[in-house]
Image (cartoon, rainbow, N blue to C red; front, side, top):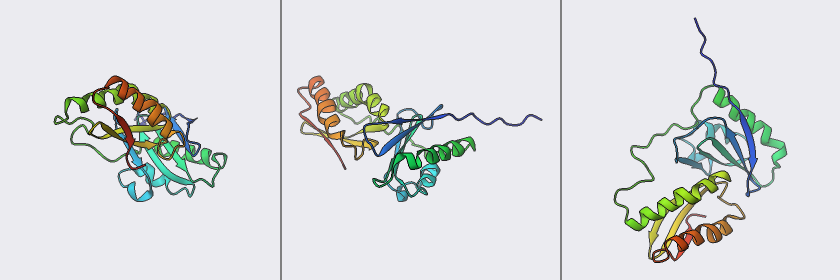
Length: 194
């Protein structure tokens, strides 16, 4: 009888603009394309067994899971050199055991709403095509929140949450792009809940 083979798990770490966050990149997808799961504290991690376990580390302040990576934000008073290998090893063991990092399914695509106006569809398209890949590269995510009276509101998650350079990214990057591509509709961009 053949034994079931374990999926090989390879993880490497990437720094990002937020000095308190570290991106743990895995060699396979952890979530469905375009979906992200942000856990600002242990109480919010009911849908993620992995996040729940990571919060058992006293150093862990926030967990974000998307695509093929887990971004962990540490507490200010801890140095990465003290904890990064322990966290990486725990993620690796969790995944090698065949456990699912997320226990959650959407009934419909959370990013698409057939009731969106044409302007909102354009904004979501720009965010998805031009901005999301760059933000993901830094271990975070940007999610459309709302659009009203020329103001686009977005949610910044993962490494972007609490990042010192997120305001610059928001204004110099995202706002400039949206106001340039949709000059008649978009006047400003704000981060919601930051």
